[in-house]
Image 1 (spheres, rainbow, N blue to C red):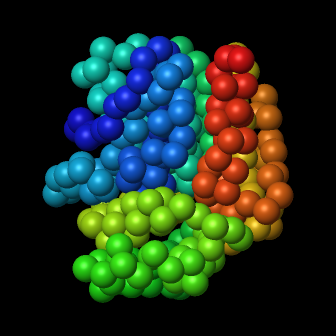
Image 2 (image 1 turned 90 degrees about the vertical axis):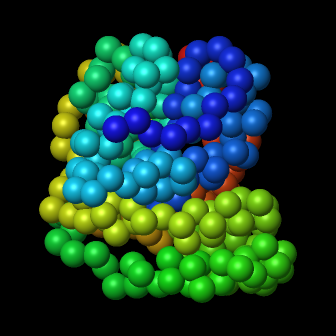
Length: 261
């Protein structure tokens, strides 16, 4: 299937892939400044953002990588740089392993799939963020104006939750409230991990925050599963979305790994 996407800028193609229950909108704080040097393409995975969720569709990370490729083929994009967060980081790793001649560089912000023991079921509390987002949807723009509410709502994602931009929090809340692909994509990760090889010719950076509560170091940050050439970094005072906590640093690492000054 072809995915919906947001596109801005010109230059070398740079593809952004969001995480579970999210959408292309979460990348806006990065794509706006990067658009002056890159053709930025932020995709919506099936059942997320503007993309449909056809009945019975395969939503494993491997299949999601194929949908990204199908979309890029439609856009006549042959080679591209990649950035992904959480599930999107896992999909980016799958792309580099399966389509190595097309991926020019990869930055994974807290990529999922790097666990030795795959999940057998969704962990407790999986439903809570989506339930809260759906219930509060009509008043979300109002309540998220409060730094206290933003801190309460995003404390598990960011140690700087009360400092996150209002627009980032609003986009994220709306995305998870309107994501019918949330549970199917969760199920698509069960009993799996990323365990493929990527050629050393692809520059890779793996970025985790030192306070990532979603994919903690003791269970979900196995370096031996990442590409051997990975520039593995742990950023201080960052959570599960390092690109939110360290915007300028995230932009800089994308430029660096892409070989751009």
